[in-house]
Length: 289
Image (cartoon, rainbow, N blue to C red; front, side, top):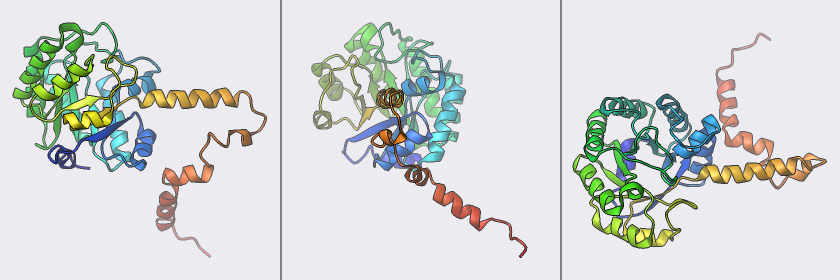
């Protein structure tokens, strides 16, 4: 879908739940569940690509390719995780162009030092505000489609406090960011301040067991957050896969896995085998009788 479709969701006054995926299959499952906006999770992608944590181990090339595969697999607009832009403002420009060419409708860019780490891990550090302002401006200038959405994320709450995070967010908005994203607020009062004191549309990271308290979706909608992001799909997949492998080690027959598995034919239909078979028949070379 086009960037215009993503941008249009910012102007109607409604909040939307944005859900993450880390590969083409999880993206298709999310789309089939009816989610309107998809997100490429850096946390989940790090685990899927390297088997390791989200501590800056994944390269721009790997994230662009992950984004491309997801965008090719779905029709919904996709928000890419651009981490810290993989370098200075010039690197940010290349990152924006690459992710836009991969099919993303927008991206979020954060102000952590490189190598970064997951926003809910301890030990984060951030670059100077002026440095991030330059990155945001470079991202805005680099996009070829003016509807491509630039989300500026600040991780300053942990190392510098909420007041500093809010000040940074104001500066990023002034630099041209379309959406603001203050990562990991630590109380309901902080969440309320973020919603009430910042300009423009905002994204809230609805994290599971992170630094942010669990709050209701309805409350976040009442506060006016445009996008409520649930990015922890990797936690769900790990839990499901771990349970499956534990059961598999104990069974005597595949019949005992029936409650854990999608049927073979149903899965093949879900991933589009029927469409591929129809194309195969259409383009098959004639046979001599």
